[in-house]
Image (cartoon, rainbow, N blue to C red; front, side, top):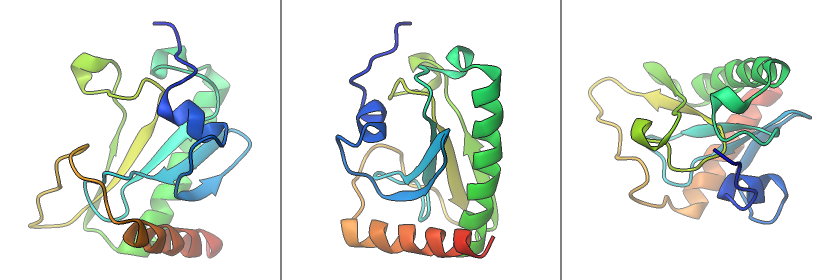
Length: 141
């Protein structure tokens, strides 16, 4: 698949579209999902243009997983979930809807069914509050 330079995550990475950024390195950007499955649902995007996992080079893949581990720890600290689901989807048949590789960090709570993904935008004030909580947790890591 040819990488689409106009996908929403490419635009966010170029600064053309705002996002609720929680963490950034030279290689990755972590942002809140604006249609979260649960409070604290975070996405980690590699900065390398890659439609899916198989397009990402090994060095970028290492940077991605190290960033996911770091950010997931902060999400855990900020929201105290009972568990965390990590997801990465490859291809439309697997449920991928934005064709820039990204990993989902989804806090999970006992007895709470996650919201359906991609169905409802979260309130911007809530997202900013959640982003601030994750950034504060990252500051202590």
